[in-house]
Image 1 (cartoon, one colour):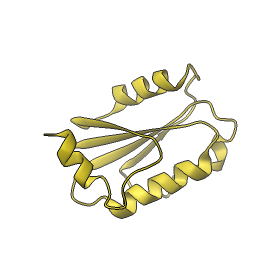
Image 2: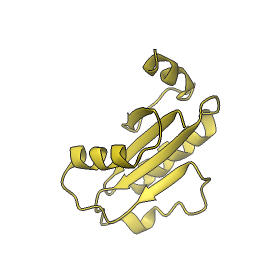
Image 3: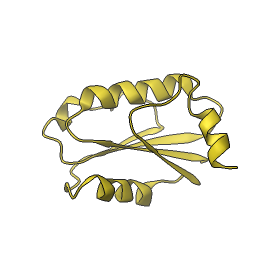
Image 4: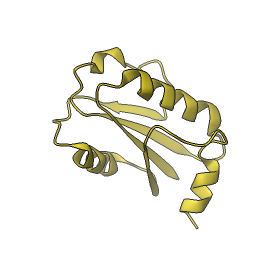
Length: 104
């Protein structure tokens, strides 16, 4: 696994779904996983991506100790050699180009 994309969700199921779908549609030339860390959202049940493909893993029930803690938990669970913390925005080219910059 080359790249672990770690996303933190807190009561933003729509943005999380859009970001995951965008990454799945535009990222093809790199092996990756997407880890969505749900930071004790009240709305976590609105985003249940069980039907999404295997690179997406969602972790619920995380005690909300802040954004940094959720990032650290995602990093602990990541299998990729490169970690990318996704802040809900990336290029329309996908993440493949960013991966080449990160591994340089």
